[in-house]
Figure 1: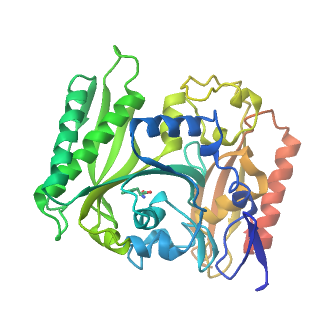
Figure 2: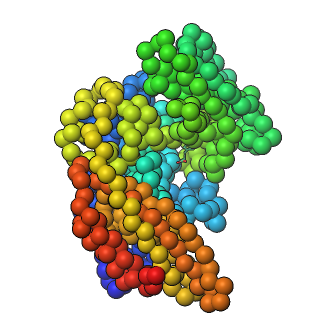
Length: 411
Ligand code: PHE
């Protein structure tokens, strides 16, 4: 068992006791939707790139990174939940699939880049529903300024320009202070500089959101909400939500880059911001794409609807019927299966035919102390009708794999 290897992007890697990538996930690694001309993810990427003239465009880094690069180098604490095998995909204990594009910050800054955008596929173990998929795409943007009077003059001029642009537009922004006691300036930063940089970050992102969602003018104003956030590698930090169809949707995280990150990259005398945004979330809104699985569809009825460089409204081809199946089991004695273990197993066995998975019920037996879970799986193909026979077979395969892999007892 110890000598097993996995081939990923042409290289072989040893597995170990924490390996948890599945074939379903590895099959997505070479796809790189952000590089497929005409695909909504790729078009959205180019629109964002065109909003930031003068920025370098990067998309060549491998998704395989060390945990050091994904976490430690960015000051994640040792006990951060993102590190756990239930949240992230590991090839082995020294190699994982990046969970965010920030994993490349140090590398890019080390090359001397100071205005850049990096687009990449990222991987996170998660539940299954219409807006969560374990592979998605992020775009990281960063900009550095000289941490001196001339750098700050550049910031102020840029802020003036951005402000003028936003003043004449149909956007309502709920803001928070650039710096506060709960969202502090870094000890090594001049508070005046940090404020100016945070303001530049906010203005440029408000401008980007206006470009993306501002629409054709006369409609409802765009509503944007800034909230204080925490990331281990920025301070102050923010999240941005936009109001869409009656709900606030989180679309990005950002902040003033931690000086220690720049120190690690050997960058001196600079101060700057970084953001990371989720391309699928934004594309789902812009193109009215109702289910995140559709981005992976190779069906012509999906792909033929899009043209490079253009945002168009997706027209759903008929929705095929759902088929719900429940599965109940006793967890193995002395251990409990994580939700994400169950979801990855289902995805691996049935692929994108699973639309969502809900934990329906769970309890602990008062006498034996064993725990039981019931999940409801919603089977629905995006391309065709499923027969009852086929779904029953899939459900049977899920049960068999559960028993084989986790030694559960089906109830
Ligand atoms: N990497 C963060 C995430 O994925 C987003 C982020 C990027 C936050 C850059 C701050 C700066 O959630």
